[in-house]
Every structure is written in structure tokens, then in C-alpha cells.
Image (tube, rainbow, N blue to C red; front, side, top):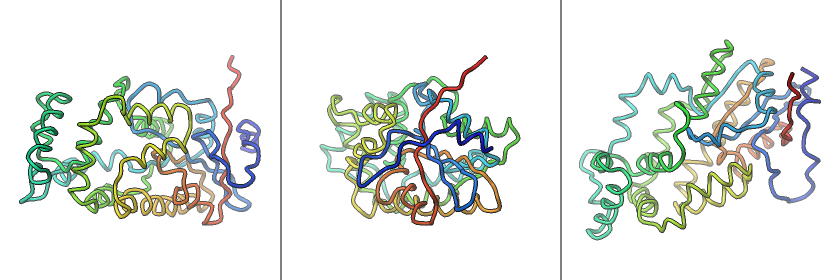
Length: 290
């Protein structure tokens, strides 16, 4: 395990307020402890998100606990409850969230993008339609998203798999975002100019391992501060607490969470440093094979 430190070299020391180093993999170490790892993912089946450096698999192999935002199997067990939570509440409907002109523009846009699936979206909280559109805008190269791939690989290696959140907590965070704010976000996604495709820009930033650029793109969603607090800040703190808990008792954890949760003054990197951990960027390395 000590050899791992030579295989996964850190970036040079960061001095002063500088851009976040361009990496998706970070070591998280308690005083006198062995490093665990935090890796930023994109919840996608696009082949580009699977093109990580060998350092990621070395870090993965060195850990005995694999963590995701959610434990995928738990989410699957609660499929019916999840679907019910995704629906607009009783007494609400998508057309009530817009004036007539904007509603028609949204419906026309959904029909163009989703075809026969469009009517289903009129029954969903707009946030989930936005998530579906974002995933569909990317490649469909893998049977499962990257986060699930890590957990599937962990099970094949007989590693413990845990979630840093429960599905109930994630659903509750979305419910705290007012429906009209969600509707405005859906309008922007459906109606905006194709030249301003935030999904493609986010993918480009991710492939470049540019967490700062990714956060700027995410920040353009224009959700109010209380929504950002529910979807990012509070969740970041909760996941940092649980990652720290799983690291206790000598466990080494490989945590794979959405890359948008990592950087920024309220990101998981900052939250973990505030809890006394050494958090260092890990440089990509190649392994000599054969």
C-alpha cells in the first residue's frame, strides 16, 4: 500500500488562491492515516466519461469500501417510491407553472426532443425532465452510467458498496426547489439556442478535468440561492460527513460522486479540509503493461 503513493504522485503544492488543479481524482487522508480517494464522475453512459487514467483504477483497487452518492441497489429496490416522488404533487400541473405562450413553447420543444415520451413529462417535476434531457443529449455507449459501473465492478471484486446519501434524502432535496424555479430551468433547457448547449459544454469541461469550468457551467442554471443550497451545499456537507465516517476504523474508501460536488468554497474538497483531512490532487499516471 505504501507503493501506491509512488504510483499515484500528487500535483505540486498549491500556493495561494489558484485555479483548481485539472484532475478528477483526489486523495483524502486523515492524520497518520492511509489515503482514501474521491473521484468526480458525470452521471452518464457516454463513452467519454469512461476514458479515465490508470491512476483511477489503481486507487480503486487499493480501497476496501466503494462509495457512491447512492447505493445503486437501494435505489432499484425503491423504484416505485422513486417514481411516485418524481411526479408533480396532486393539484399541480405543468401548464400552471407557465403562461400560455411559454407552456406551448415548452411542449413543442419536448415533442421535438422526446417524441412520444413528451406527454409523460407533463406529469413529472420539471427537475427530472431536465435530468432526462441532459442524459439523452450525451452518448448512449454503455448499458449503465459511470457511477453504477464502479459499484458493479466493486461487487465483482467482493468489495463493500455504500451510499453517501439515501434516495429519500436526494428526493427531498429536489422537493425543496420551488416548482416555478424548476419550470424556469426546464424552459431554458428546452427553448435555449442550440449554440448555448450547456450539456455539451459541461461534457467538454469534464473531459478536460476542469472542475472550475464545470462549476461555472452548473452555476449558469440560474437557480436561486436556496435551491443551490439544497441541491449542492447541504448535500456536499452531508456526503463529506459520511465519507469521513466510512474512513474511520482503518477503512480505505474510493468515493465516486458527481464532479459538480467537488470544487468551490462549499464543495466536498473544502468540506473535507475543514474536517481536518489532507486533500490533495492526484496526477494521472500510466501503468506499464506487459
